[in-house]
Length: 502
Image (cartoon, rainbow, N blue to C red; front, side, top):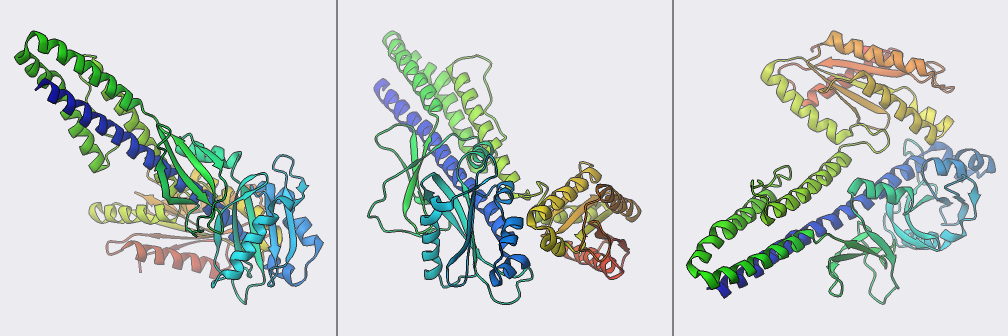
């Protein structure tokens, strides 16, 4: 009986602890993949902003050195974190290519990225849908690089495409620091030798089919990163923690020795003591861990016994791991609900919050107001000053919104390119109008120049304000606020328009 108990204890508990560590390692690898994809999404947004630009479109028709020196020089690339930018005409011929020194902002020879550009040209020639945006990972003589390419159109997408814009960003330095900071996970990226394995084009740089535990090295999970033509070029190496297994093994061996000693003295007392003092508590720990995992309630914790024995320390170690999982889960939730440029809530967060606030309004009849904000003639501003300057304006406006809508229940969000919104619970129309006017007044203090605006020589806003009524659903409330914004534009812009119940 003692031998059977020892075998069951060692086998089942060791496998259980190892399974927890392996599942956590696989979750961390998935998070690394999500973080790399987030960086590609951020690069894709920059690529899209620059490619859908009237001046870029006109430059391809009549290439001039003045445009590239003024709008897409090395300093402009450094400002938005780009390592290189290349422009192809319709025939896939290079008409401009430059690289930026990310420290000094000086121009560098883009020769290091010629092979990457050639592989992208190969993808373009093989693609059935040239107008789509594509992103991926590639290798270069100076390290791994994230790349995106998109056809060049006018700002309003009218007419046919006029060429292709390629941008790249090194997967090192600031980008890697941001990935490490967001995930809290330590990992390495190492180059691998190209093999005869067939290429596989993926929607993500990290190939999920290659995630595996290294049989030759303990506590090591690896996966392959593929380049833009589907070849495996880098290996992600994740050294995961084995503290739970180590602590569990130490407990198991202590229990084994205790069993052997007590069995020699009194077998019956041994069985009773082991069951009451160890097995019962371990089963309870296992049961509670399974419950936490199934419910996904990472904020729950295992109860700690008053006696500070090894099971107490094991429970504390597991609680620390649960706290880390919860922190990383919250970080992923925050990334999914935050606008990458302005760092305020995005459209997804806005839609979810508005639905909750409308339900609360219908239950309690408490006032609920919505403000929609549109930047006047913002496309003209981008065409005149360039997209980097336009990004700075959006960041400034977002900062003003968070200063004005500063109550815990208020929510400021960027819901479109130059569109913002503010949800104001427990606020009537008079209070919301005061908030809207305060936004316009604070923006006026910045005196952001707009030489191409028919309204004023500075950036101005058209703001619509409305209040929820009992029969409203979220879409009806948004439509009414949008109608108020349209009226503000129709009456000359740079105004606040309040729309009452219809």
